[in-house]
Image (cartoon, rainbow, N blue to C red; front, side):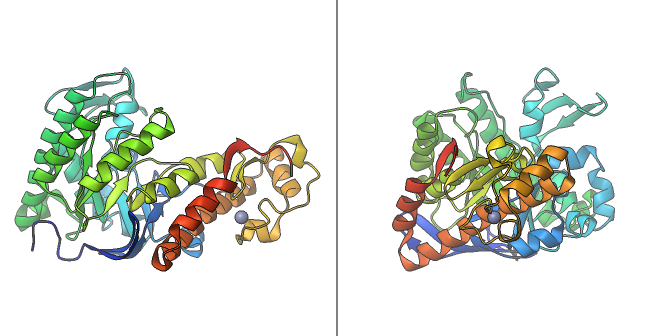
Length: 391
Ligand SMILES: [Zn+2]
């Protein structure tokens, strides 16, 4: 077993176009074509969709939330069920975050020390501690195919250097724990490891400072992981700054390993960051916005609750091939939203995820055929972030 591969996890690049990369992640639960978008299944479910819906949409990997699953229903129960795949009935690939993002969002309910972070559950106020080691163990019990290290997040106005340095120290501890679990079968059994092929990704921090990002890359690479994430972006910085940080950071990561941009973003961000060498994305935006009546289309954002759609019998996006757009009108979707039918969330979510997953499929095809730049310029020309007024 090499240092950067598990026996079953691997990544191969099959085509490139400029800095854009087309590849395949091989995981214990199937292959994932990249660049990919991972729908977010916070509590073991993608809100408003069934697993069957996700399979029909072509989702090959979804994301689970360590913080929420640790608190409810608990990772030990999930381990006894055979791991997260078995517990939720999703046989395809899964990635779990470290739980750090949620903990650091609990303003006033957490305290960070060198050991880890102590926090109060948002459910019952009970005290918990998350350390680099325990975040590794929890994810080993969940048995996701890709586990993330615990990192320290800072708000964009604070100094980024101390958090970057602590993240690097925590990365070494998380990796040491992971290698211990891989090499000691008795320990793995006592921890209830459910997926011996689990990969572990390090996270590059450093805010918007190029020098800090470079130092974070070097320190994270020195530890050595199966893949690398860029964290701490999409937290309120201007979008051009985010793109600059990605353009600065991604080329410094190993060419043969997967690169994951955490928590981003709008459809045009995906296109822009594939162009800067990113392979993997996740974001709550398409699912959360769907539940708020926002449809993402090739032309931009449609707010379906607006009165202008009350009698609009056109499909939400005439160019979209999803079931929602093939069958239903804007007027019907607005009606479902206004009267509070569950179908509103289901149909809107199905459309938004179809839009994201189809966009990634078109990007992958364009990279193979050397036409990614054409797709990119066309997409940026037609897509607008401002809600559409009328057409
Ligand atoms: Zn659609």
